[in-house]
Amino acid sequence: MVSGRRLPVSLIVACSVNRVIGKQGVQVALTLKQALQFANSDSQYRDCSRIFIGGGENLYKEAMTANVAESCYVSRLHQVINDGDRLFPKWTMQFTSLVFSAKTNGGGRTRVSFEIWER
Image: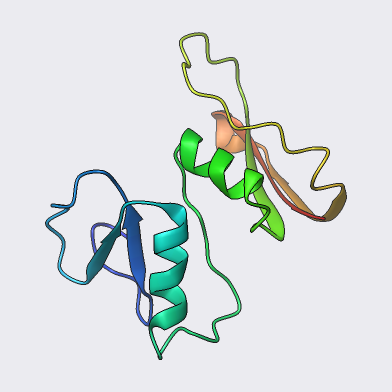
């Protein structure tokens, strides 16, 4: 979503134990498996080239354990975050080939690197 608006030509499936998301056009799945089934059963999106898994920590772990991710899009914030309580799962053994990398100086703020890694 961009500024609370749905992206054009996109299917949004939210994985949540809370079935009441309250957004029009959002399907709610209880598990990653169910979310992938929703995406694969929708005729408009059945043959889509990419499905993005946008977290959180447990959903990322489930996707990596199930071996459904072909690539890993990583944003690195070059800043120490002392009070962070969630971690991205270990991924460097599964995704070993760096295929894209871009960096920003942060415009005087936090520097950010964006990388795409593949198996």
